Length: 551
Image (cartoon, rainbow, N blue to C red; front, side, top):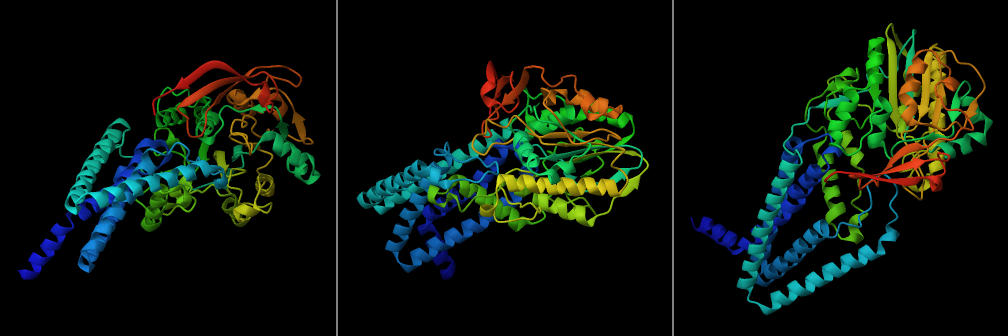
């Protein structure tokens, strides 16, 4: 009984330390990852029921360790305990302010390399915050009695925890946080299965700019030889500056104008796409190899490679590590943020694949390795294959041989050359397998790219070849747009050659629509019209229409 009384007494003595531990660990390991999920439901395939058990285990373990530290400090020396409590309280306040009030200048997690030298002002602001809070808490600690200081720490810890709980609950209710996302896996099933009858293939190379690609292939006849039989539309206008809305549009022709949530739009786009419906009516088996397909399965059941998978996380430790890094990216002092960076797309790697299947990944090098190793298989049914790989998207980690290299050794041009190597190998495989001539083949991008300016992404690359089409590599500067794709698809299905799929011809003038948004502000879309060439950003003008929705 004496031992139990001593333990109970020590726990009572560190009551404020316990509450401070709970508050800090709750904020970092439960509130932060859940808040990120609730405010970015469209970005993650997992839901609250998958995330919470893993992060609650981290929260509990961190609490136990934190409380144990306070117990040790109290046992060693009472003065050391008080100093430890003050230091911990300073860290708690600074982390809260850093992660909730000083987030406006955070870099976008869009894959582009982050130049941390550009954030000197934010680093100074962060340093001032930590210094100011340290001085204020240190002064209070020195001036007031320890008992009063302990009560203040306890009161703020309890109050902040309750406030964070209420905020989380509000976000969950307003952001469909309690929705259970169905478990779907985008697999590699039948990716290299083709038809001896007819095929329709779209190889989508992410973030490859039309003019940049043309400059590269124009300088080397070996690259031009890849696209014998193809027409390159150099004056192609895209519809959005990023992948998220571009891909559903490419497959459906349906605009997203912030009229609903993205998941509702995406589900509707795939479920009611006239193009996909016509493919099914003509007996095509549909394979869509798009790693970023969202969890909502409405419209996805028509894709033969999108299969139910077991809910849960394959590698829980890796998943938890990435969650903690994401928290650190937001909450850590600016001088430490660069050590916490993680690509949100990495979370796809933690997904459990459907039984007996392999999940599709968009990596250039992995797709290329698979190309070299796997043979084509054949089916009597017609086949539609939509394959989306990283292409030229940052970070630039691929060389011309489509091998992974350190980011500091890569470049945008090298990444594009890797896509040319991949495209050559893919087309050669179709030729060797006897299914090149009977296939419609489109090599395109979802959007363009510009290293220095996010606004200059309106000119995606677009090559196309019709069934049994034979000619030298051809270039057209007709003023065409992704708005024209649905009609172009139908003409290709009817046997039209690549120079017959658009009504617009070289030399004609036309205004084309484009919806622009910043990567971190997609709830505000600005309508532009392009009366000039697609790559002429200066010719574009705002129409005055802005499409907004609440965050």
